[in-house]
Every structure is written in structure tokens, then in C-alpha cells.
Image (cartoon, rainbow over the protein chains, first blue to last red):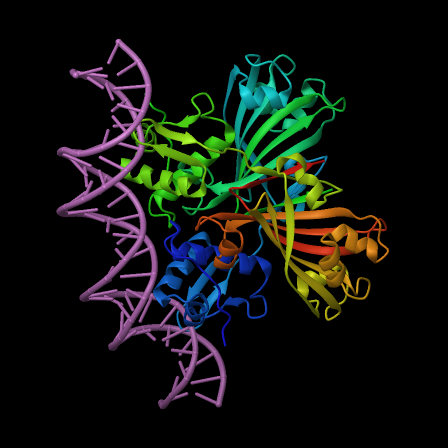
Length: 245
Length: 245
DNA sequence: CTCAAATGTCTATTGATCTAGACAAGTGTA
DNA sequence: TACACTTGTCTAGATCAATAGACATTTGAG
């Protein structure tokens, strides 16, 4: 007898999307590795207690993501399974961490601005409200797939040429070095999860309705003085965060 | 002119739920602290570019959660704002971490079993597939609100009386001590986000359709030998994870 | 080849979601 | 009191989500 996997109705989240989420996770956990393919639609429909058409909608969404490929007569094959694992440790560096998981890493500058620090930004950077900060907005990709969008803030007094330096060097670490800061460490990371908004959906090229992992992180120099406050949104269906302590 | 906040249609996630998620986050970020109340329904409807009735559905969901309270003629007031922050560090201990954020902490044992380690459990604990492990299933609450559900695995060879010890002592740390293990550290935590399934919805008493943060963590003794592998699901609208490095 | 099993396509129906508009009822201020 | 502003309630219609059933098409195994 099939195991009954529970989905809920009238939640504001369509059944096909809940089921797509569950199948994606099962693929990523290796639950279907033995066969290399997803169970037949009728079996899934039985497991989730829904109509076969509903399962088809879920599989269509996963096919749209490029995660599975259906072949008439044979079944639905798994094309790709891993989520990229993003390590968070005291020495978190974006491009290093992804390492061998992706061949090509790119961070693109969407825009920059100089503005006055308000509430959370000022608190996190340990500066006074109203002090000038430089904002960099970036999107990062691995092998052409967008993985995260970020807004990062730097005290303008200490890093006046952050935007230009990043634009030339394409690296926060190098831009810090250009200001005479050779080393920095991650001191704090907060993580929440929510549904992506439209702006994130388009920038991350997400199959709509997806979930994002939002992190608020603080990096500091070796004296403990904050040098960067960053808000990033990771596509939750492409990334997992790995905390190393 | 109102800022346009983007929501997406035909995503499998109803507009009212996306909007509820965004308002919940805005409340938690303190965006509405000045007034102590949510903007009027007509204003929100304008910002999100939807009908006022859709906003009303979102606010009704938040009222159901106890987050806001609407008063005819006055507006919609914020009743409660903070998410509980769950710290993850090398010395992660559940009850200690929540500290002053909640007055009363409880972990209830839902059940336990002895089973044979399979794939991820065996790998994480560094034992051979088929070796016996003890499984504890628990739900943890703060001030009566369920915060997380967990399944934890311990090598039965080393911790044969884990279930009984936990049942008596109501603490993993003390149950370890009863087996002669005085100290342990968190070595790895992986985090993914997804929609809650029906089982989690009921155990966490979640307002349906919610998001969970799922963590897979490994604790080890001071020699680096794994002693616990744990899978936990945190209610994403009540918790944030705070990584201290 | 034959057949079972799997995906693909179609129609029809029901309920949930979203929009639109109108008006009632409560609150606070001038 | 009069008024502006806010939430509460109702109706009606359009679109999306899910069910149900029937049948076509493709694949692989015997």
C-alpha cells in the first residue's frame, strides 16, 4: 500500500505547487535515485491523494525548471538533482564557497547609490543614523543560472570608492583590499524564508511562486568593526545553505 | 505616489498569501513601527496593485495568526511583531539559545524507535548502513506556540538508552551525559526552505500554506565523532535562524 | 507482434480566487 | 453635529485550480 503524503487544501498555495515542492525535495534527497526517474503519475496521484491532472501540473512546473523530462510511454526522468550548497562560515567568500559545484561564477552589478543609513543598516554597521553609506545591488549566477540577489551596504567614510572598485575588480574582497582592508570575517547571519516577490522572481529567473531564503549578514574587520551589511535572497529551489561551525 | 510592490499571478501561490507573507515580513522588520498599525486596506491595495478584497483576505489570514487586529473605523493594529531568533553556533543547545525571548520552553517526545541506518543517516553519523540507530521524534514549543518538529538519530551502539534517558530528563544534553558524554559541538547545519506538508502543519499548528525552514544538522563529540544527526522543521513565520560564527 | 504501462490530450464540471462596485457602520476630529 | 476616513458586508462576474472520465500515443518487455 502506498504511503499517504499529506497536502493541504485552501491554504492559498495550490496543490500542484505543494506537490512540485515535495517532489523537488525528494529528488534532491535522492529518494528516486534507484530508478533515476520519478514514480508514474498515477502512483504519485495515489500517494498525494489527488487527481492525476494535478500531479501533471506539478511535473510540468518541474519540467519548466529543467529538473525533470517526461517521455511518453517511458516515464518522467530526472535531469538534474543537486541544489548548490552555499557554505556559511567565519570566512565566507561567495565565489570560493561554491568551488567545484559550478564551473563558472559571475556577480553582476545591477546598480549602486550613496544614501544615508537608516535603522537596521546603521545598527548593523555600528554607525550613526544619517551617516552616508554606499549601496551595491548585485545578482550572482553559477553556470548561467541566477542564484542570489543582494543589496550590500558599506560605510562611505571608510570605503568611499567601493562602487568603482567593485565595478573594476568584480570582487568585494578585492574592493576591500583596494581600501587597505586585507581581511574580514563573517560575524552574524540571520536567515528567514518567504515567498519571492515579483522583482526577485524576474531577477532570479524563478519559476513563479517560488520560495527564497533571505539572509541578513554582517562582515567585520579583525578588530570587530563592521565593514559590510548585506541582504541577500537565495532561490530556495536551487540553493541550500550549509553552516560550518 | 505609492511605491509599487510586485506580486505575481498564476504562480500557484494565491495573491492574498503572497501579500500576507510580505506584510508579515514588513511587520517583523519594523516598517510600520511609527504608526503601530498596518496601512489602510485601500493603500495596501494600491501598493500591491490588487483589489481591496484581496488585501482583506491577506489581513484576515494575519488576524487568524494573531499578528494583527482590525477595528472598524480605526484601522488594523499590530498585535505582535517579533519572530523568535534561533541561534546556531558551535555550541548550539535548543533551550539555552532561546533564552529571554520566550519565558517557557518545552520539548515533547512524540515517539521513538530503533531502526537500521540508511543512506543519509548512516553517512552523517559515520556508521555502516544497517547499523542500529535510535530515532527520537519531538516537537518543541516556546510559550505554548510550537516552533519546530524534529527527528533525531543516535548510534544505538554508543547510546543504547537514549529514548528512556530523554523521556526522563527532557534534555538531549542530559541524556548524553547519562551515557558518559559531557560535551558535544555542532559541526554542520544545512538549511533548505519549502512549503510545509500536512503533517507539519498540524504538529506546528501552522496557518495553512506556510513555509518551513528545514535543517539537517550533525553534532559530534570533542574527538569529531558524530553523536547525533537531526532533521528539524522550523515554522518560518515564527522563527529566524541566526548564525554566529 | 501483442500487450501492459506510461505519458499526452480532450471535454465537462465544481469550487476557490480575484476583480468591481456599492453601501453600511464605526472612529476620531473639527 | 458634520465630515473624512476606515473597516465590514453584500452582489455579480471572470479566471484559476482541481476533479472526473475517456481515449490517443509512445515505449519496452515478452
